[in-house]
Image: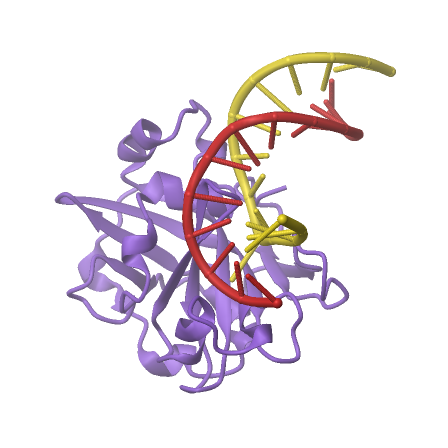
Length: 201
DNA sequence: GTACTGATACTCT
DNA sequence: GAGTATCAGTACT
């Protein structure tokens, strides 16, 4: 699959500066682009989750502006990367106005460009297993804590989200309760592309 | 095919 | 010191 990144548009701050669930829904079908050691890795976002703040017990920002959650209060369009379960990094995009906490967890992408590099980073031969989960995704894309606070809207940073010009309103996006959490399960804040093999289980 | 377990280190109380 | 926005491997059916 050939994709010319020059023809794509970088998502701007205004895209992220609104309700977190709206951003989560609209990020489905967008293109995550990673520049790494001169190589380009890219994938279509097929699964996201929305995390709010004080009224969302599953959110890191629920207990206020702690050291870790501080970035969720920051500028929209910033990458929030954090470490979990002793081994895995998670990639989020900060949403809402500054000083309003919110972030979208990017849970899974469908690999498009640089799959060879991703296979090297992941110990699997199955392309469906390359980035079909938040921990797998960051591993395949070489994302770690150094990417925390990166500006996703800046062309100069090596981590961006582009508009892939896929008609997102035509996509069949389903919602469900969020995964892997114990509190706040009742809301359908997980969004994913229906019938897509690269969504996590 | 599904179910259960252990690995592992960081953040917050 | 406890809990965690997970994954891969093993042990089942």
